[in-house]
Length: 457
Image (cartoon, rainbow, N blue to C red; front, side, top):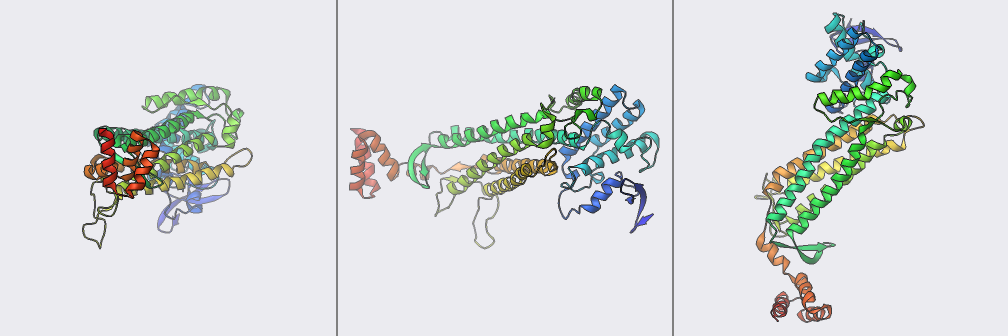
């Protein structure tokens, strides 16, 4: 059959017959999803390779477990495994075209994989045509002893944990960068501010060390939440019921999955959730990581905005630090340079906070026994991690590494009116310093002389 100008094949599901592109690795349920949920520029399943990889590994582990327990013929199970290993070794993004946020609790994700694996296994191991689903069927064999719910949930946990691990290295790297600069600039004092007004003098090491400590606090909290993702619901097939899979499969699947992950050099140590029904009703562990990532994003916004303020000028602003000039800052003003790298960090963090808002909404909209919005959750988290990692990476390499203080400006600021009066208060007391402030009437030179006299006396 020809659909438009492309040859097609006919497949049948419980809804009826439907045309599928003849050479497509996927099948009828994926084709329905492609037509029902137009992309409109949005992301596809294949745009989240960590999630796809994780779900394929769950499928591979399920096939291995089914072979071990005798639930599937060895020849069929091994064919499934070979097909999955081929996809893991050589990703085929064109085979996974469904909208990343389709309806139905992630069923299109799961069936997309089931159909592709079945078609590849049948063609490569048995010479069967695409769409024949013989001898291997997407539901009866590839999906055997698990379901969309526990496969997708487990894949989400694995993918989010893996993504966070690489991001955490960037955050710790930024904290290390700030510690290094703090030590390098340690002798230099700067003017601290409260409510954007002059306050006291502190060391750059104090300020930068404070930012580093905030980042590490957020990192520790997020790391703890990420560790919680090692608790998975695999085996709780339908709304958490373990009776929907063979007892032997239930007992063996997680050890097999851990073995598969370890063999691939990936983080293992997975364990079953204490309550599988709770895991079906809500995605609280993923939401916990979302919350700590959002707090990290807001900390990064504050720091990036501080950099913009401290670098403002060059003549009408604070001018306390010099950021690397990486690109012209105006199409109309010659010589203007903007703090575009900190601004990129702010934009990335803003986008991350927007994703977090969408993820948090899913907690409000789960009903009774199942929360069907996990696609929003996992794509939101993976997007958060991706944009934050991009922002931190370029902030470190294109801004922090080349950032330098203005020594003269900071030295002058650190001995300006209010810091000098604070120093006088330390030497002579609050009442004496207040009297000098009144007598000086804003004359900094007068105050500095009185401080020098107090220090000498």
